[in-house]
Figure (cartoon, rainbow, N blue to C red):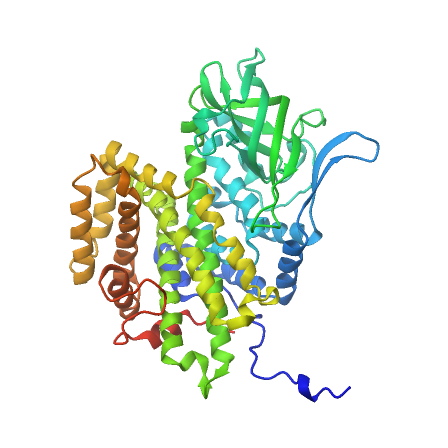
Length: 544
């Protein structure tokens, strides 16, 4: 057969073999800005190592294998014994092991740990987002466990370990452990106070027996889980180990795995608790207060994960357009395509800059920074996660028909993109949480206003945005119907203030003009032609 008709031309090479971290100028600048100079050399070295690993052809192959071979539930062994195990493709274990080894569960144990982990998490999400779920759950469990010093002393060294041990055995015999959570039930969803799972005290003051059903259990093959159940004193948080101290399996019956739109490599299960042993975490009746630190940490991971997905979508789009000829020239040089790419790059940089700023607030730990997180985390989670889907879809369109084909990798990003907007409370939950903070915690609003005020006077559109926001904040009595609008404005003004302070002028100018001014449209690619769009695209371009 004559193969001359099958000569491949005008197709981009694979985007592999580069440093995903070092090529991200917004991310590297944020790490340099927020990290103590004495930590920067070591952090840069470890993040660049992770960045080079993230773009390796072998890891890209593992990512595809993990996505194309979703986990399988195995309820019984060959002899009929109930085992309730989930079988994963070997690629999943390889990716998860690398994530653990990179310290993506170890933020709480080292200086600057949250900024370093946030940058690593953003990089690692770009490889395969599914394995980031157990990494996030394990990281976020630490603040909840710290409400009980005895439990924290026992479990924290395991959860912050850089050793991945996949075997199911008593946690005291393991060098590293992973955590999941099971909070929601089918009759309540995000309204966890409607939970009906019952917790019966066993008489020693800390041990209980749980009976009930959990509608969503994240990472069901973990070593332990944080679970909410109704104790005699009200809704309470519990630690449920997968394997008991004597080596027997704790009753933790996996009824089925969810068949999800995206996040296909990761298992999410429905779980039946029937005589399940649990250890109380915190006081009876304070379950929500106990897990709130975990929820806040996972919400920040929603921001970082969405930022990672957006960054990968943008670099794939720019890379394609850099190597694709169309209509007599390079596609990236066409004014209209450049406008689209620049607009996408703005959204990506704003998300990254905001996510790292919030991670730095965790490292600071001061009273004002904690107050800022109370408003900024749900607002950022609401907005950044919602922007992820239109960014990934538009970026896929930059590849034309190729972007609709599975082999391009773009459909995996598109399928993954809605997850973070739903996980840990969908949009309305975040907006209502912002309202609660505004009404009940004056220090939170004060901290937010101090933060955005640092950029006041530097851009007239930002100043106008702040003034409009203050007008909206003046009336919080009948605000629930416009809570989404208010939350959106809080996030946008915060992003703009950070870009005005820290981003190159061409980035800040374009963002303020299109997001706060009246010079942007409802779709990407509608930036004013008078802006320096070429510099915006150059800043986002990967060094392959």
